[in-house]
Length: 313
Image 1 (cartoon, one colour):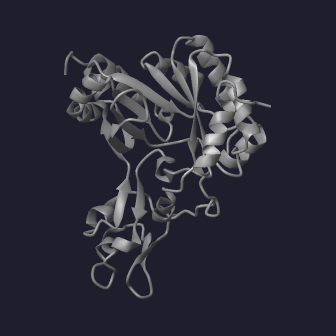
Image 2 (tube, rainbow, N blue to C red):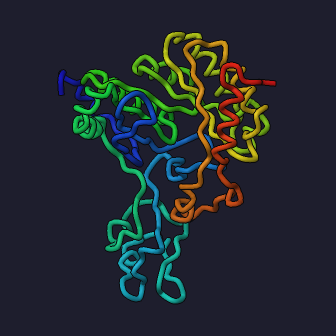
Image 3 (spheres, rainbow, N blue to C red):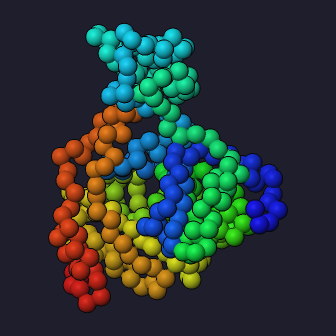
């Protein structure tokens, strides 16, 4: 480390479900993405459903299961009796109401069919991971991007991580859905060089219908963010989801909303279905099975529509 770090801060713990290295899409240069567990939204299209709870949770991949006829180690260690063999003994079923996500069955599973998604780590442990890529940051102008889930559901950990990264000379950014306490959003913005901010729809009814929360706080925080940090680069992102916000009028409304602010840029992200198998692993249905990703032609049309000189009605 380049400087002496505060021990109390580096010992701050949080729950992380993934660390992705060599990313080039979530900030300048080559970046390390740290995904924090927990999100206040329940977006119908969420590609990381394992990110929604704050804390580790059990995943079960039946394709890896040896079967209780050959193994059954998980059954012997589950004190809650949340695991049951299927009638043919080739797999197990997980009673999610009884499961406490203690992790005992995952530790006992020889085939890794049972796995805990998310683990508690310290800021110091994350810094050790970041140091492995520090040479790439300096050469490319990259750094750390904290994502989720929603980082502001773990505000103390997020703030401690950003401060520690800054103290070691690592550039930082945050991705947020904006549904958080203003005090927490304000504090983290003191320690980032840019922020990625999701605005999914300006329609309060549709936003509530598809994400389970109102967009009021999100939009209020965005306006407050602009006023408080008028020079902070902000990238507004909209996931383009068919049946929700994929028509030009919806996108144009958001583009007009952010257009007065010179420090704001706008990105459209096409919906994809890459995370659907994760729902099965954590025992949840995926409600958008019938939805197909927008075509490249449709995305190009939307981007051209909101580009300078495009038509916005």
